[in-house]
Image: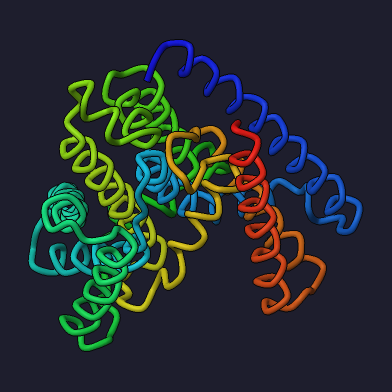
Length: 320
């Protein structure tokens, strides 16, 4: 990707991010008027806690989508890695070593996804859909569909401790990993190559970029981010739950798309994904405070996603 194209892309991302920020502010104003509890500190921290899983998973998916692919396996990867972390701790490993091993397992899942897409030439949708079913089935099989409980106080603190008694640690993880992901995407050669591959894979190959290595990187990164989410969830519920995180891949993709990441590849940003996840979190929380049923909450989320994809389609027609 040329410098001029990169600058144009960054300018477009900035405009889209501002649009998403305005939409988020409008939602917050509406819900603060509708419910006196919305702007209370505890509720805002609850939104941050609930958003953190979507956001962290969304970071990995943002890289994958920008590279012109997709990863449907992240929800099952969250459940599988959470179960594996719990089993490792039950086997006698220290929480810190179990966490490291779990991150490696998540990276391995991403690597296998990349191999299916690049070496086996399978469509990303089909390859990762198969991985979704395989990982979920494996998590259910090795646990006999039962939770794997963790009775280690230090592990519980990973997600249950609150900084200054107010800010949940997962919110800190979300922000720290967001900074890391944004740096990788915007300030490194590999990040620029991710954009190049997503914009035009053949042109990227002819310019000397290893498309295979980029695909390996984005899928491994997605797997690691999903495993971070799995560890956080396991800490929150003090167990590895094989049935947890069903449908979380849809939430993460929705956050990225709402934040301006294109399903066509070559376009997106981490800050956009953060605000996209916050829009989803605020929407669900606000509707819940208004006693709107979960069914209608799902409907509203679906409408928001459809609208975001339609806007992306309009941008592609205008050549933006």
